[in-house]
View 1: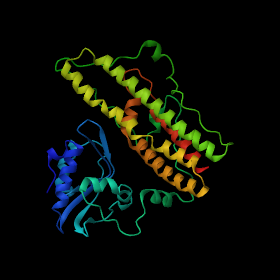
View 2: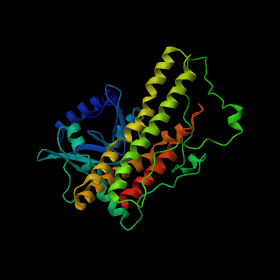
View 3: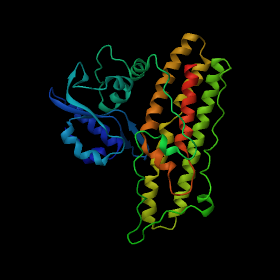
View 4: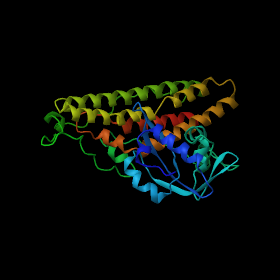
Length: 334
């Protein structure tokens, strides 16, 4: 069963189609995998699927549907699949079994069957550690204030178009006040206090957990401030235009949802661990979560768009996140 346009409207419709495809797998059934796709569920909450598996389509037949989807959507591989011992077995070059092992529960929920993982496959965390063995912990280099865009790699794509407006009434973004043009950009918002390196490791881990909650509060506050400014600017637009704008602003909330509480919870568990061995095991989990956050912040273009918004809100999200994630990395390593 090949996926069609209606199957990609929501997470629920995608899961239903995938379960149907998995139940019809034959030895030559095609599949393809993309690095990330975002799908809303029926309530509007965005689900980030990394990697994104399509059973029943090869790349050539699924590619025309990509414009319907959100996310990075970078093609990883394709191949054929079969059912072996009740598991979906994927055969092809560059199948990201490490990531799929880490997300095994999610894939079982989507397919209704587990994915067969080759014996000895390292999960995503182990792959990260193997690649960086002997190297410093992954860090961001925080940019100077007012030069956040320069820190984005690869280069930041052009600023996206403004939200649509009613035909014949083009919207003009608010021009910054003259005083703002004559002064330097505002400094980034103050972040949460960072733990001191002179304290015992469990104490610093506990403080890092609190600091990550604080970082999320700062990011969420700036996102809410931006949404308020957008609503104020388009408040007198046609109701249909405002409805479309409101439906698009969930993308801003998705940043805070993606950078969730899991890191703070893991750091607190490591701090409270009864033995050093238990602490090391939990720190390995925290490192995996942190690596996932770092990859997301580096790859998500919406963060740069928010920092360059034309509504006069100084967000500096990339700088705030870079500094906080670097501090988290240093605390985990110490």
